[in-house]
Length: 69
Image 1 (cartoon, rainbow, N blue to C red):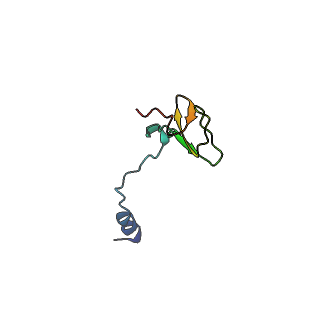
Image 2: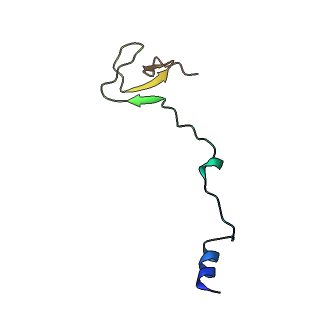
Image 3: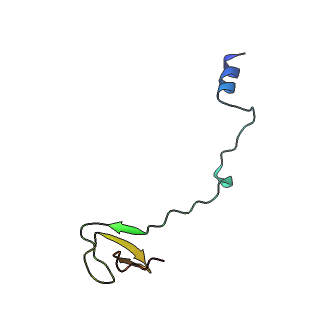
């Protein structure tokens, strides 16, 4: 077996060329941001300081104001 054939066999080359174009790849949607945190955060519903806030109907709210459904 030649060195090229050995390398092809080792790499799992099936002898067919592969098209790596992005046209066949499914579209991937970016992950949605659902929470944020910071020392200076304030709940947009009750106005209380909140280091962690969740997105609820377009507002950043504390855990007590978040509608968990």
